[in-house]
Image (tube, rainbow, N blue to C red; front, side, top):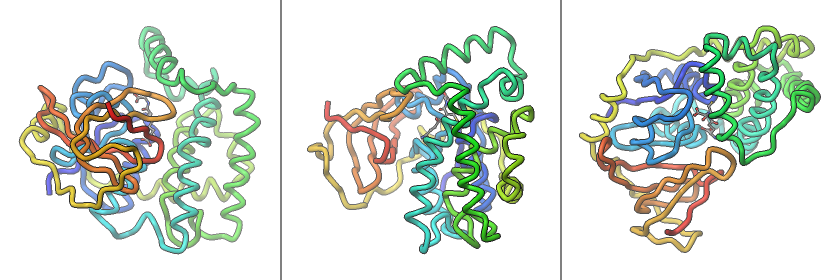
Length: 308
Ligand SMILES: N[C@@H](CCC(=O)N[C@@H](CS)C(=O)NCC(=O)O)C(=O)O
């Protein structure tokens, strides 16, 4: 199999979710560091416009969104599993909540003056201005949560998570880690990049211990890769087999030209030829001057497909 390549940057919470899954599953990976703000020409050459972080690449297969990336890593290395049978449904639903609700609450809480130093501390005033402008456009499609609101919500959410650990079990759904642990973890990891704000975790000691336990999975072995090398790999590999049954809920057929984009924020559409639509995945093929012919995969949940 071709190398497993993660396009990411250090301070990205969703990237930390995937880096920690590499640690959990002991998957060796290549690391391509991408810019935190637009433009990201080498990344969008691979995806066709999708700019969110992270993106996974295996040969010329490009996987967008960490919900799908987690499923792909489960296929590549099934053990230890992210989806223990007895809790799979609940774990996936809790993960979806954490990736949306908990994530944006933590973001709103951290981006107050006392927290900003921790997460943006290394930036010059110009870089901070560019970052703020980029993110304002990026999330303009959703209502903005105030620090006051976030300060009220977050203790409640943390207490609910603490309650889940009350029986003394090591992970949210019992003896084994699941996708829910990784989705909740990346939010708390980001919060802890702002030491001035971590007092909010004081009333939840089990959650703090759980977070330390999660951190110990580490990131396993990675090697830096240049973006140009990743593009060369995309150009020189054919995509993997797509022999999964076709599920049509959009009136689009295989071979149609379609556009796919997220439904929440960062609404950059990706156009291509529909080559697969399964119960939980959309796949398009497109050709790019830098990346060659690539196959771009999206999860069905959280994405919108339109026939062009
Ligand atoms: N649902 C997406 C969310 C990804 C996301 O929001 N990532 C943030 C960074 S952690 C992002 O894209 N920020 C803007 C950027 O990096 O350009 C996923 O699970 O991958």
